[in-house]
Image (cartoon, rainbow, N blue to C red; front, side):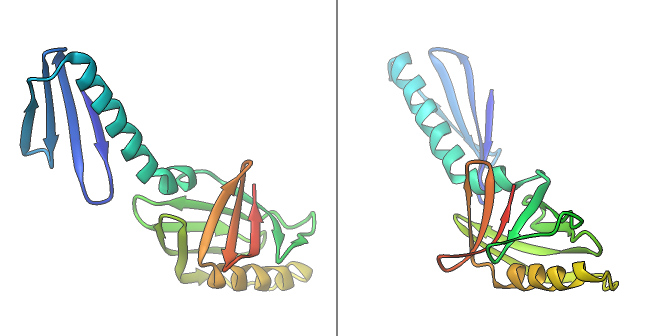
Length: 166
């Protein structure tokens, strides 16, 4: 049995044998896929799985990985600043560390759009890092979308990169 879930729809595909395939939506309504050659059933299942996985790529790519900050507004951060960012897209939250203070909040992820909502941060003064931290907070607040490219997370405002993580 294969189970799939999108934000709004949960379903499973049950294959007892090549002649018995069921598609179950919302764990309640099940539909038998009959009168179809086994190879056609398999093709439908594979296409369905590819479709679902493409819909979920945003949260799966970001979810649970500890991203490390490289640049803010195209400027390399100082070596002593080790900022991190972690998403839990299932709960719609994020948390991180700026190298001095911790931050967290709610986030909205849909397709390529990403918004950091309700940014909560501790405010300790940490010398030079405080200036960089202020730029990081500004970048998070300005973020409208994201891209993941070559193992890097790019936070963007329009087409401008506001922060780069790896």
